[in-house]
Structure formats: structure tokens, C-alpha cells
Length: 417
Image (cartoon, rainbow, N blue to C red; front, side, top):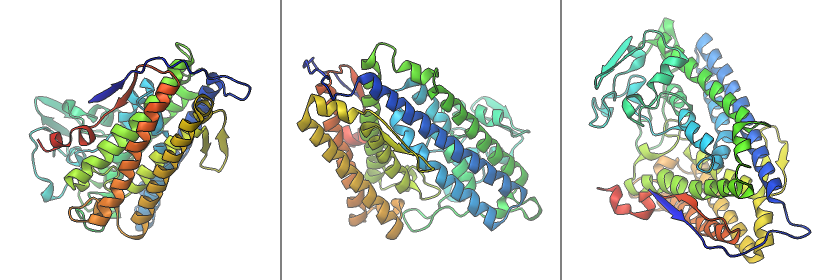
């Protein structure tokens, strides 16, 4: 569901000797997007290289290196999620690279506890890696040759969103395997021999390696596309100025509000907490969810303050939304900045807990009062800062902004129906 906010004009002028020009703010916004996607592409290429090394010489060491490269690739990418929702070109593309949760039985073998069928997904356990052809629900897919175009055709097969065949999480599943620990300690633990034809476990090791390579190659190609969209003359950058600066500022605040509220606080956090369900954590195979949440929060800060630290340490910064808000309403600027600081502090505390006490899937477990509370603090901070984002929308006289909602926040009883 969506919550549409339309405010009456309040006549606040964004002007003055030291005021940031909206067009300059949008240039900074686009420059940070470009830098974030370039960093995502660079780290995806590093991942691609480690995947090739794993396939060439499967070992505990090469598998560990590929996993580390995957974790590193998530750092810049998660910071770009503040560009979703408000930018249609990003939102339409995002499902190819970061869709979740996924029904992993579509891709590979699964534990018996996974079950054998689903009322919602006829391809629930077809195991493409083990099959030259898969048929279900009246559809047949020839899978004799695993290539990027094949796994593209499998993505959302049968119109089912959980049939995630491409992107970060398909790669994550192939590198870690299922996390069978529930809300107990431990992540996925796929053996390197699942990729070793001469000492093969799990069967179909060569096809599994080809699937992993195809997914890594496709991720690089998808990120190359998005980098192009944010370069000078690119479609995403050009779209910001269509209809004047108001269009771009609306995109910025739609992205900040929707990621903060409906997506992160709601679908990625509150839903899993309500259900006490480890399947509802974002990076569920690797137990990296705390980092995904932290870098989403950092990405919101990047966009608002107009600054981003690149993977290599270089800083991209310029005129910002924060300056526009301070010019329009200094008290509101103080409020917004305090809310962002509180939420970032809560995200840092969650990250620290995950690295020193227990993983995120343990935190959301039933009966874990302290862990639940740590998650709820961040949820509360995200909701609270969204209320301030709504006031920013009003202060800048931006009507028609749409902030994504979530049943888990707006109508929790519906979650259990």
C-alpha cells in the first residue's frame, strides 16, 4: 500500500545570498548516484574475478575470498538504495539486482525441511541446476545450457516474485547455501566441493559453477547499465530536470521517505520482527543483514547532506538538501538533522551488536527481548525521521510526494491474516 501526502502551498522561498540553488543540489544528488553505482560496479567486478578464481580452483580459500568479495560489494550498493522509489529508472531495474526474498529451490538443491511444494509457486523446487529442462504450471524452460540469458528468463518465472534467479541474493545463496540454523547462531555453510567436479558434493558441480558465473557476469552488466544512466547525458540524470527542479527534489524526498518508512522500517525490519522469522531478513544466507540495514541508513544521510565517501576514500560532496531545508526553516533543519543522527546511531548500535553479541536473525527471534528491542529502536528512529521528512516536504512546498507504506507498520493485524 502507499500513503500519498499532498500539502498545500506554504509560500516558503528558498533564496538568499547563501542559499543552495535547487539545480546545484540536484547535480550533487546525481554525482553521488554516479559515484555509488561506479563503486558498486567496481566491487562487482572484483566479485566476478573471485568467482572465476573459485571456479578455476575450488578450495576453502577461494570460496572464502569470493564470499568476502560479495560482502564488500554490498557496501556501496546498499548506499544507492536511497535512489529507488523516486527514480523510476532505478526502481524498475532494482529487482534484477537486489530482489528478495527468494525461493532458492528454483535454483539448486535444498534441505528436506524446505518442503517440496508451494501453493503460490509451482517452480518452488524445480532445481534448474540439476535439470536440462523444467516444467511447471504449464510453462517449460529449456535449461541445458546455463548462460546469462537463461537465468534472466528464469527471473520471476511464472509471474512469481519469489522466483529470484539473478542478482546479489542469487549469488549469495550459491556462495553460502541455505542458513538452516533458524534463529540460532550460524550462517549458510555450503562446502567448496559443491563447485569441485573431481570431488563433487551436492551433484551437478559444473552446472552450479556455470550458474554462479552467469549470475556474476549478469550483475556486472546490469551495474554497467545503471552507471550509464547517471553519467552526463544519461537517462536518469536527464529525468531529474524534466519539469523543473521540483521534479528532482520530489524524487529525492520520495526516495528518502519511502526507503526510511515502508521499505526499511516496514518490509525489511518490522515484518520479520512481528513474525520472528529469519526468512524475512535481507541477507539471510550470509548473516549480513545488519550491514545491509546500516548502509541503507548511511545512504539516506548521504543524499540528505550531499556527501558520499567512495570505496577508495575520495569524497563526493556539494550543495545539499540540508542547505535548502536550513534556508527554509532553521528549526526544522535542526529537527531533521537530530533525527538522522539518532537513526544512524541506532543503526551503528545494531551493527555492533551483530558483530559482538548475536546475528540479526537471532535478534528477531521469539523471546529475545534484548535483541528485539535493538531492532525496534532502529525501526522507531526510521519512522520518527519519516515524520520529519514529511515536514520537509511541506516546508519546501513539494506537493504530491508519495511515500511507500507497509502493512507491518500501518496495519499489523493484516500481516497475520
